[in-house]
Length: 167
Image (cartoon, rainbow, N blue to C red; front, side):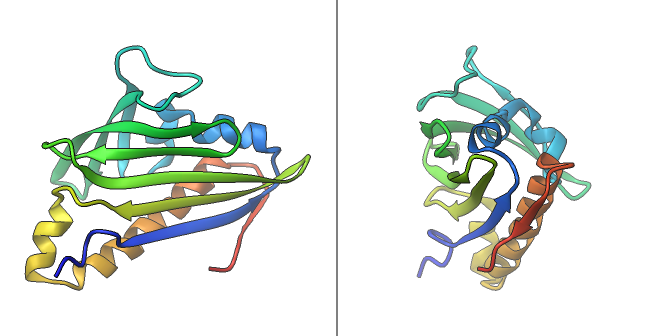
């Protein structure tokens, strides 16, 4: 039984920013390392950048604890200005290890709804290996990811009023 593929978590916020400004923030991939507690560094590959397009790739370097650092290749899967920005993290066989997504909805001219979603893909990941020994690791990792997503959004939105919406 595959308890990893499709496991997901999300964070939803109501943000006091116009949706266009929020779009600029969520698509500023090189700044992810400034905001995230896990991601140390990100950069576009092959000159890709603004505005991001489906098919553009970037590399990310993530740190887990003091001992484990992993570099990953990510590919933008959807980029609809002021609506959706999504990418897949590829495993070594170029299968989707995880799927990340920002969904933006204008509430009015000065406020937007932001939903940040993580979903485990079917590719090989450390969590998949660990889940074979301890199935509870999946729920613990999802809780950790949700906390880190919340911290990332707080750093990204520094100085901007927002509130988390009920799940």
